[in-house]
Image (cartoon, rainbow, N blue to C red; front, side, top):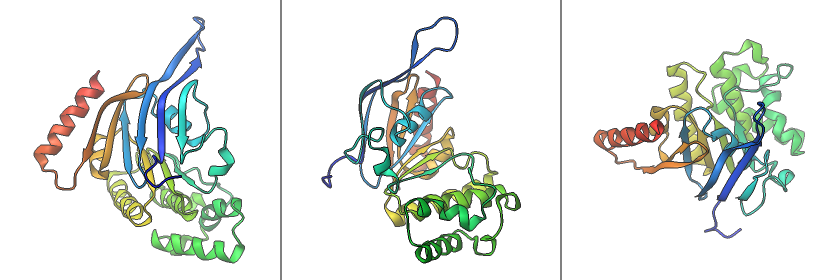
Length: 253
């Protein structure tokens, strides 16, 4: 892939599903959506419930095939070439999705196992990430013995451990208390800056999107861009208030 090529590209993408009620027919969850994400960008996607954020997420993951249009990730079709992306995409969900029968270390190790990384190397990588996320003393703990914030740290460590080129995050901090969420958000931003990974971050929180920085897109139903802006490091509070107003206006449509 050329260095200037988009890391993620949606070109006129529509995704339709069959209706489950008696009316029959189909409905569009994503409607003629087009956007590009460049390497190293952080893009926060906001939108009301049911606007197609998660469907867009699943199209990028390769879990869904578009009904029409084209989705490419690093120049490839993520649905048709799903296996090729195994070590290239890391995912952090709202629910930590840890395996309850595996320790913190073993959960972080999972992606490395699937990628057939040697055992000694896996152990070094896992120990390093657990230490960096403040979990050195909890490596042998099972998920039930960890707090919600700790479990989400394990989930983040698992995603970063495979050295992903792309991170997909689906409201990863929304279930946490404000203090824990803020702390993890700062750590997450620092890790992204360090690793240079491209990130798509789905959130329902305007303030979270503003704190993350980067680029912000607001979706309307069916998923299409109602408002988009880039958040600058030198923005004043007045600038941020203007963005808040524009987001609220887009969400109200």
